[in-house]
Every structure is written in C-alpha cells, then in structure tokens.
Image (cartoon, rainbow, N blue to C red; front, side):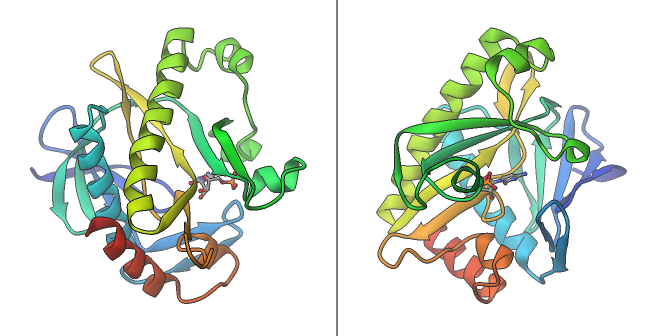
Length: 234
Ligand code: C5P
C-alpha cells in the first residue's frame, strides 16, 4: 500500500489517502497536546508507542468480534485503516472517577463507578467539546437511535475486554475515549486506543501511566509510555 495525498492533520495524527480505494494511512506523530492545545510538545518515540498499543488493542478487539478500522501496520508509527464516515462524538467510558467529572460533579477522585459511566462529548474544538445527551445527539442528527444504542453497547463491551486485559497486568483502566464511524453501513471503531486517550493507573501504587504524566508534569512521559506499552503488549 502506497501513501497518496495528505488528507487531514489532527493534534497527534496525520491522515493520508492510500493507493487502495476505501483505505487510509494514519501516522501517529510525536506531537502531544493538553488543555485544548494550550500545552504542546514534541516527544520523540511517543507516536510509536501509541501506534503500537493502538494496533495491539485493535487486533485484540477484532478477535473478540468488535469491528474496527484497523487493517495493519505499515511502519512502527503508521497504520493502514478502513476509511470511515466519522461521527463527531467522543465516547468516554469511566470505571473510576477522575479528570473532568471530578472537576464538574461531586465525585471523589478514585471512587469506583459501577456500573461504568458513559459520557459523550461533541467533537468540536471551537466549542470546547461540550457534553451531549441522547436527545441532543438525535436532535443534531449526529446518529440514529439504533446507531447510538449500538455505539454504547460496543463501548461497554470494549471496556470489558480492555479492562480484563489490563487488570491481568496490574493496570487499572480508569477511563478512555473512543471514536466511531460508519463503514459499509455498519458502526466501526475508529481513531486510536492509546496512552493519549486512556487514563491508566498502576493497580498497586495508583501512579499515572498515561497522558496525565504529561498534563501534570508527573515524570518522564516517553519513559512511562515505553514502560506501559511493554506491560500492555506482553
Ligand atoms: O478530560 P476527561 O477526564 O474528560 O477525559 C476522560 C478520558 O478521555 C481521558 O482518558 C482522556 O485522556 C480521554 N480524552 C481524550 N480526548 C479528548 C478528551 C478526553 O482522549 N478530547
């Protein structure tokens, strides 16, 4: 598969067309941003670790019957994916209270959320990704009732699969963000599942092993991403 025209550049990934119709090429860059892009840096190797972990999880999910956009790796930081019509929502699954829900609601950081809480935000930087509810999603025409139910069911199944895998490796899956799209008239998981999009805590020490290390200057980000990637994929 050959890289063709540049299509789109996000905060941490660049998307290209490929020479194969219906497929795209995604390059995970070393750029890292936080707080709506206010904090930004370039961290050598970060893209590779995120690509490696994303590919590992996409393969694992496919083996467990979840349809994803993943087709294969082209380079350590570059994957081939199915082209999807992306739905502009961010689906966040939370098993433990942390981050924005602790700031916005009276949850105590670290409190278990059982059953898990799904929060869906509108993906729109100019509006700072406002939180949606089912009625808003339907009124905005972002998804049909059937698609929304499917997305939520997939998100919860993905949570169970990831949570079990990580728990076996002594890692607590606190929360994570998913993005979905339509491919061949079916809802597919797109985007990435990486240390940039998950909150992971060491089950013993409670230490952050994810983008919070960058957000809150908790240590050497690349060293942490490298360590956690090894723990996840082995
Ligand atoms: O910031 P907040 O606590 O709402 O984030 C919840 C989870 O979703 C975190 O794991 C965070 O890294 C992820 N997230 C993301 N992209 C966003 C917003 C949140 O990957 N735009």
